[in-house]
Image (cartoon, helix red, strand yellow):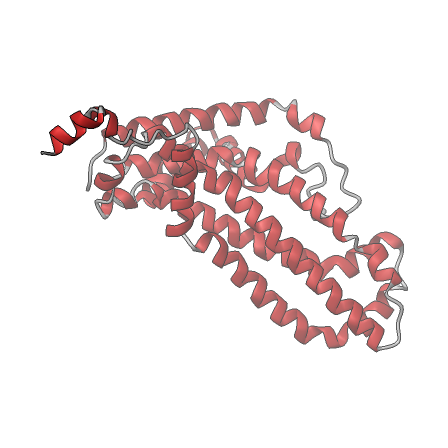
Length: 309
């Protein structure tokens, strides 16, 4: 009867079927990144916890701020800035360290954990390619974690500046020196530059290596990621008496002279001379990015052929 009714209305059944939704090229990637944020809350909880602990200690020590400022006024301008900015540098360092540890742990677990809990079978059933999945996971340490660290650090330092200003005003001292030595906008820009150059571009091969090992190792991915590097370094030292490989790895973690022109100063120091041209023309940067691309390509291929553990 339904067929007759449709025929009488002049509308065939085929034309009444709902066409399947067509996903845009960016939607699978966007939702893959959202999935990583849902499943890995430590990405923002760890730096928030570091900021909270540091702020708690800073509030307790703020009672000694007036005496600290009186001592700083007796110093020359450069040492005066270092004396005043020291707590702010410590806060940024603690948050960046927490973010770095989160990024390293995330990479080493990113592709192995989905095979260990067999959720890879579900994710492979979705219309999301291995390339999209690996790039979404690489986006977390290379984009999401640095941006979260930058935002939390900026807010933390601004709160510290307000607390300092209130403490100084309450003790009858001027806050002009404090705001002159510590420009929130300048500190924020210098920190962002440091995060992009060091924690993203310069350290990219580290994250690529960990993601590749995570896609390959059946278990104990951390050992598979570290033992070969240690073995190469020890073998080089025993055979040739040199430690070029160890220095190269340490250079990637520490930042290197290409990314940090003044290694003895904190990245938010206003005396830091930014040299983006020198950094972008460094062969080490582009070699590292090429190695990162090779690691990510290998991770895509390995995920395509790896099944549950």
